[in-house]
Length: 463
Image 1: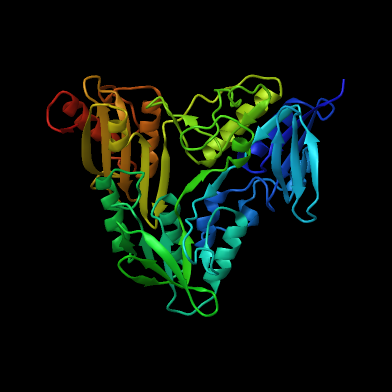
Image 2: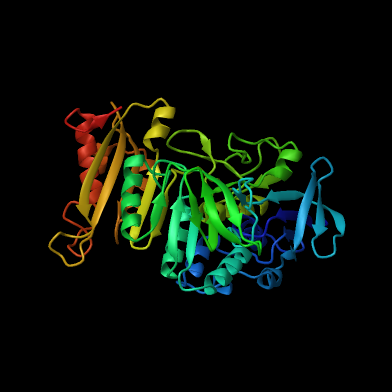
């Protein structure tokens, strides 16, 4: 019997994890695997680009988990600088263009994996494509940004547009490089992935680091000089001088191919799959990574969450299923962590606005604590905010802002959310304690106690 063919569109986390897992389960004489990647790298960590730009880690090679040559040595036919431009689902084939020669060719498949990732938001503003305006999506983006940061005069000025995860990480990289940094954000506070009161803590900390934070402000244009290079970012109120501009406006699912082929998309434009990561209604088409929407276990709805952790898990699930096994991806609770200099930022579950949108009645509890016993050297402050459902006490979400030792505490809440625990149940969790690591009551447990009291109408705020 002739080998079946698996075609993978996209050579990063989800796509190559799927290909690698399928190869472990099926030999080349059983399954031929062809992967198309339009870029110059495979299996790399885009999350590491801000830290490369900031001089914390080396790049780009250090950010590559597996090269095309390594994939090929494992029996995966990787075609670099090749973009898939069309899908013929009835004919089970894809149209691929060699970006160097411009030639196009149809390739048949028995199984198709769509791992096209996400595209950065780039608003159609005057000057947005000028020299000196940088994204941080690919390793080529990182190389260009590093080159820009290595040059210039001593009084170098940078503007970061957007204060989400990408924006604050880019701001840290620029500060580490000695640049004067302005961050412009259209929301009331940085980190719109937090509630505004927690975002305000991030703003205060960033301002204390010498970063100018401009909120409630839209960028209207990018000004260039006679040489075509960026020289300022324009808002309704003023111009902000800039030698470099970094765009941190988030990403959207890269689903143009899927849309043109008539595949099902969700409200954010991401592909919709079943729990096996099979595209709904298509037996032999799979999708994973930043181009899909995933089930939110707290709200019960699908959401677009672009994270490498999810992408690698999607790929493992897809590869297992294509390879003849069975696996599922049950969903997520929306856990994410980040940092800007020594400030750690974490969240999981729902924000207040999301809980209201779901029609949930909830209480909140916000506490201040420390990362270690207060008497132990190096204890640092942290703020924990917790949301719980009125009546049932079910945990709905947690946000943490603090210094060293703050962010990874959110993992306790992520497990509690997945287990659908109540805040009262959380107060009895047997967490590790010793003065160098935690107060006798861990900050997460203190917040849970406060939230449990609020559920019982003893203090707290409710909505």
